[in-house]
Image (tube, rainbow, N blue to C red; front, side, top):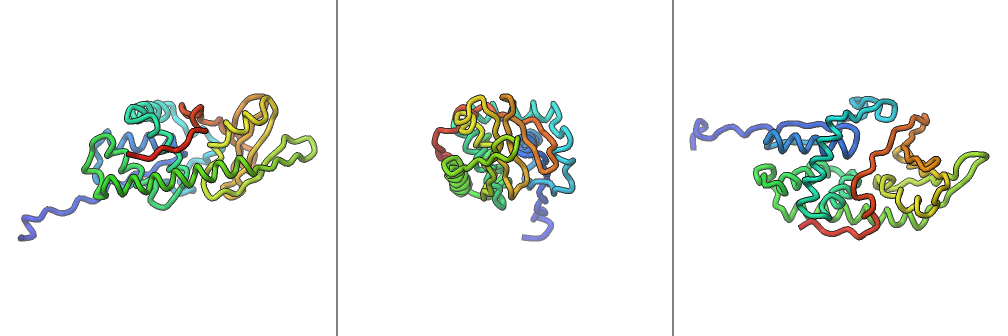
Length: 226
């Protein structure tokens, strides 16, 4: 075949997301909506992010777009959003890319990936299961310390970003009491004061927590991607 008859391979469209799961969903929604295939997706370097804990990075448009995508994803199977969220929190190399490719396949875009559906499913199921196992370990082994007049705080150093998954368990455990959990490796925490849930970091800047729609199902087991 002559070079003229062999079209050049199209370079992937590069996408960066900032601000966690909400930003990720909105970005994947853009990829699908714009038919941006092939594509690459990764989290923006920390220096590119607009001080996540000091500013309101969540624009209303992004939040609405992410919520619409979340609802559409729920229609693909009630267990799918939770599975995707757990896998995302694993923060593994290539997880953002592989999850996005799987989401594209769910919405009928086979051109989005050169990987098979089974390959994508195996990775996502493995990550989600590992995150769920560590979540349960943290719930069972948590030790809360109280210093002076501060609220009781549990210091953890989990492999995966499980803190957003611990809120339901500790709310049930403490009822109306104040408490906090801090991830020493990622340098951020969650706390409840007077019933109000929030994030905080080392400089004590507070960011209102995003509570995803299926929080009530967080204690049910992970189901595999199909």
